[in-house]
Image (cartoon, rainbow, N blue to C red; front, side, top):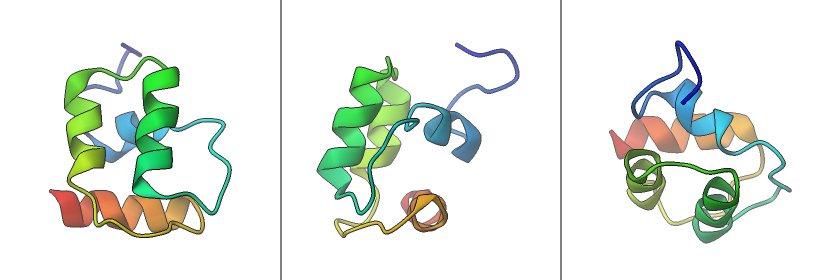
Length: 68
C-alpha cells in the first residue's frame, strides 16, 4: 500500500481509481479499483457508495463520503 495513504480514506480509494473513464457506474469503479490492485477494505467502500453514475472524481469523493 502506498505510504501515507492507508485504510479506506478517500485518498486511498481515489488512488485505486486512477485511469477511470467517466461517466462511470459504481460497478465500473469497483472494476477499475480491482484492476489497480485495491484491497478488500477499499472495495467495500466502493460497494457502499450510492449506485449511480459518477461524472467525475469530485462526484466519487461525494459518494465516498456518503458511504462512510
